[in-house]
Length: 276
Length: 113
Image (cartoon, rainbow over all chains, first blue to last red; front, side, top):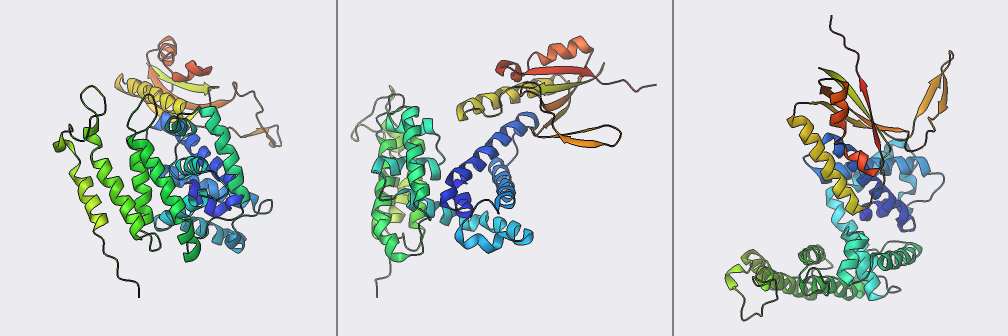
């Protein structure tokens, strides 16, 4: 949701986007604790965030500048609500997430900072969860995230995923960040969880997102995807009965996830048409 | 038996993600208990923290009430109970009490002839 809202508000208003998302979650708590959790919680949250976004855009349009290409659309009431409606359309969401992912992998940021930003802004991980992935304290992570977000917000505009040259240039950086997230989940350094399946699933999800974009569907991305699937397939068998890591040799292969193996194979078998 | 209104005051409005999870679970459990025991008439609604006060013959409107956070009514629930004492006892299970909040228990005037 932060990705969608940053698209609407502009990267310089990243903090505002985060506030709106935070607000949606707070509202969810207040309403759901009395009325119960709705059938489709994420749809509810999206709708709430969308309404707040319209409120913010309407209220602040004189005080703040928003995304450059939205300028005129925000002038009238009718085009404003339509513009926001479109922004929250499911078909555009994947692009927003990609855009945010690429923006997070900003050259001015250190690799760990990039990874933390991707986890928080695209993956929706809280500071505490990011901290446990990095064997760091939530306070230290908060600080780092705060500084990195400031750098990001000051960089001006979101990465343009339509620019093929820029995309190709930054692609390896993004792939590395995703691989690091997967790696951390697969054999992490955290004391309380040797395997972090949430990190593995999130990195797979994002790598898939990358692979589904025309500019991202290159052999290196597909190979990364295949690697993640095939490694993740072995996760159910990686821990033995005592919770210790078992070697490849000792693993019960019947516990390997066949679905994941198939996905991994499918990724590595994709044939791209030869470049003309 | 009668209807009673619970008015919630105080409590946290901006908990951390971990706290949110716990708070949610506790409320859902309490509401479930009240439903199971047949005491929940209407779960009610949460209220926004902003508001207006309309007063006087001319119906003057001012912003407010500017009560302290702990005094502002944040939501309500309608209960069915044997009597005021029973309603108050049931309110003892409200999770808002654990986070410095309070529940005002008011009997709804009986209308049966």
